[in-house]
Amino acid sequence: MLTLRRPAGRSFVLALFAAAACLSAGSLARAQSKPAPSPAPTPAGTFISRETVSVTNVDVVVEDGKGNRVTGLRKEDFVVVEDGVEQLITNFFAVEQGRMSVVGDEEIPPAPAAPPGAPAPAASPGAGPPPPKTRIVIFVDSLSLSPFNRNRVLRSVEEWVRGTVKDNVEGMIVVWNRSLKIRRRFTNDGRDLADILKQIEEESAQGATRISNRREILQRIDDSKSSAEATAIARGWAQEQTNDLVYTLEALRTTITQLSGVDGRKILLHVSEGLPQSPGAEVFRFVQDKFRDTAGAMSGQFEFDNTSSYLGLVREANASGVTLYLFDATGLGVDQTVTAENKYQSTRLDSFTDRMNSQSMLQLLAEETGGEAILNSNDVLPSLKKVEKDFTSYYSIGYRSLRSGLDRPHKLEVKVKRKGLTARARRSYVEKGLETRTVEAVQSGLYFGRDENPLAAGLEVGTPTPHSSGNFEVPIRIRIPYSRIAMLPEGPRVRGRLTFYFIVMDAEEKKSELTSQSKTVELDAKRFEELQKKDFIYDVRLLMIPGRQRLSFAVRDETTTTTSYLQKTIFVSIFSGQPAPPK
Image (cartoon, rainbow, N blue to C red; front, side, top):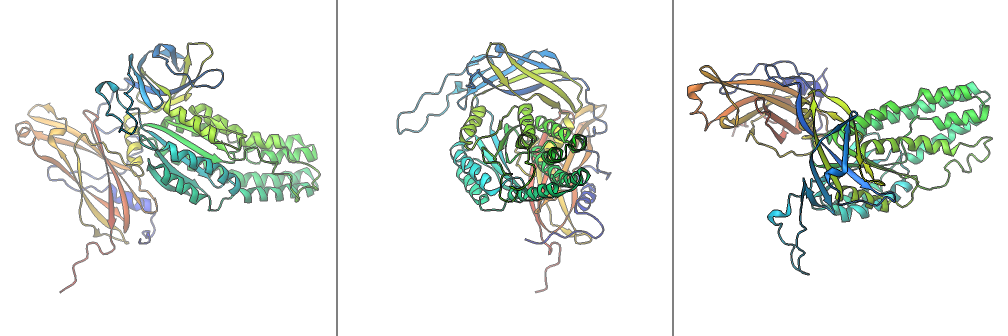
């Protein structure tokens, strides 16, 4: 694979964007170049109602007082409250043991059992639709994990995915270790995922180094002569850990955002040794206990508190429909501060403060997104089996409410009318406008294929030609049948409007800016019938560097809001566009 080359004086992203905004003429219309818009503009000339009624769906798990799953409920057993106002439930289905059992008010009979040794019978017409696909992302935070704890948990995950990830359940693996790597994209081959996890067990992890470095910090504080000196050491450590946390939360946010345009039930299993609410809080407490300096230690803890960042992550997860399950791989291990290196310290680290600081945000993320935090357990396999129950036995509730059309957050509460039962669901959601949903789907298309093409759009790639500074112009032709475009009469003419979206990612997963262009399609009404069997053609030239590129594209009919999504892998050779050598 060729090395990525950057244009002199410009970033890779800027180079792609500059060309992506440069659109050339189609055979029936001409587009004009313009700067890339902000992520969610309203296309010029398009009418969008600011008050629309749409359906919000929320998945709900119901348990009794002993934590057992409760099935057999109907929509009249639930109450949904949005922003303090009870909502009318309009859509409802129940999934039990991985199959639809109730849709609306209709109970679906179970499929007849197949005789021993015979293939399963085909679904009968009355068997109802299959439940939504479940997609599970396993996020391994190797920056916080020690090899021993990581491998202990991953061995349980390996066993679990072998039997769980199949058919309508897909899994994906990403690893964070100061860089975010997708190790396996979505697949329903659980054995393949287990093999990848086994490979990860042989790789480096930074958690042990972090613990060792903290011991040195504690020893320095124990040897310090004053509270001011000790607090300065603690502040330096807290700042270092904050930097790591900022990038870790950004990696999580990026993973969650990439899932926003993906359909189905979305679950993220996060494996770490905790996420600190206030990096260095346990070290500041160590200073407090040694010097009895409550004011200095407390101010340090407040200074590095990151609760607002976690609330932002909650908002992102609920906006993307992702449920978080967070596994603390520390388990019930021995106190990490009791070692030969620090047995002579005059003060002991407060293990309660240490554990609460690293686990409280795991609980917050889980509770707010409808998942669970798995804490203080050396055997996580039972918890994984409980996760499986969450996506094979649950209720999906939908309701309609008046919307503003803006990207606004809303509080959400689901209750069960029957006494002794509790509902677990996300506690908020973000109302997304049409433009935001389209942009997110195009961005997700870089990572996860999206097979939706109601406009029957076609995408053709021409021969790249040298441009400048090592870049190549890649001609792209888009075809859309006129019969699929909504055209409204305006006197002697008919008009429609299309909006096109483009984003490109290279082999190193560096992305261009997403850019969009709107085009009015205008025809003489007398010619409309004869063009019904022909294509509207739109040409664009994208500036790319040599190597493999992933293009994600969408086109939306602004009259009907019908949208097609396409993805294409393009390889640009450094020899592209060169004349053939003489014979």
